Length: 155
Image 1: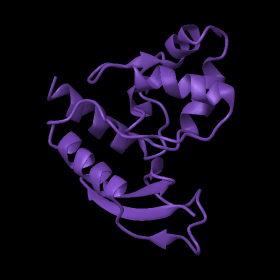
Image 2 (image 1 turned 180 degrees about the vertical axis):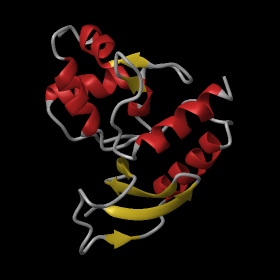
Image 3 (image 1 turned 90 degrees about the horizontal axis):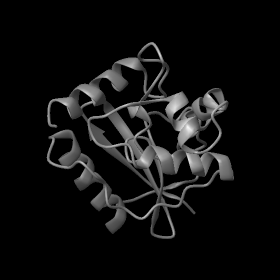
Image 4 (image 1 turned 45 degrees about the vertical axis):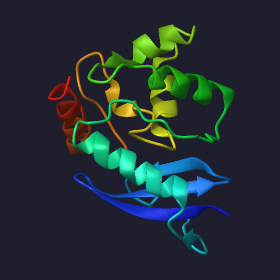
């Protein structure tokens, strides 16, 4: 059973989830998740995730080091891996990611995979922008702008 822990941050409450000692969730809100009958507890991993998030939000951490268990299709996992290597403080377009994973016409599908990212911020989907600038983000465009500004101020 997934264990959950709320984490207060400058962008609001983040929900952290763990299964079998691996991080499975970092959500801005719970509208997409059924959290009924879930245990809310502080585990060593969720405590470490909170610690790393706090360091990230103060500009002291640029890369997360946490064990992940990402459930998704092969395409989604390929996209999430491509996102995970975007350097701190940089952005890529959906087209860039599509080309990076060897599917140059899949920019729209990359956007859908981005939207399904179960561990936002940890896998930095906020670093992906449209050809003409900022576009949708699960945490809202204000949150995306905040995260990009935070990183740019600490590069």
